[in-house]
Image (cartoon, rainbow, N blue to C red; front, side, top):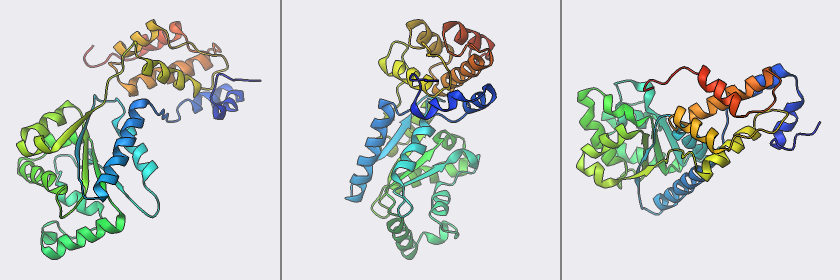
Length: 287
């Protein structure tokens, strides 16, 4: 059997039985879009600029589920090596309301002492040396919305530390990722507002060529034995509207449709099958 409509690595999977193919559909998907490639390129430039003494602060802003975390994971996996960690990624969502940026950052550098004990000339020199050893250039805080919900006593210290992280003592560039709520949080402090640039992730457009290419790439990774037609105007509009432009939700619907196509022996995704998946999906909070 030949399946030229599938990616090469998926063609062999399409020959497996239904149960194995349905299980394969749940594998994580990563598709490098133009936006993702631009972000990776910008981070590479940020690393190079930091190494020659120029530091940048960026707010990565996008709706929930658009793919911010996936992009961060990809840039770290591509640019970090066993010998160097130019990208340090920190997920702030796990700390609840107890986000002390200074303590969290230093602990990720490997320090076990309290942040206060390192606030000396000797301590700062130790931090600087550790950053040089790691070849650290960029620190990325994911789930930055969590900063808006910290205990009152930590709000001002966190603002102060965000301002300090890109100074000459540390010499790292900074990316904080979140939704519009993060953008508001950063904008409250005048100094942060002047230091942070905003890199906004565009939402999917139903008639956009990027979205069409994205959907075609998704179905090439689904082990269906017949070609799928998913780039029609009607399908793209339904997906964008029903999933509120969320990449996460769009991929969920496509994956569910692929599994249904295998289970029913339909073996392809079309408008009727997608419509059935959308109708079966639980309504969104705002629906």
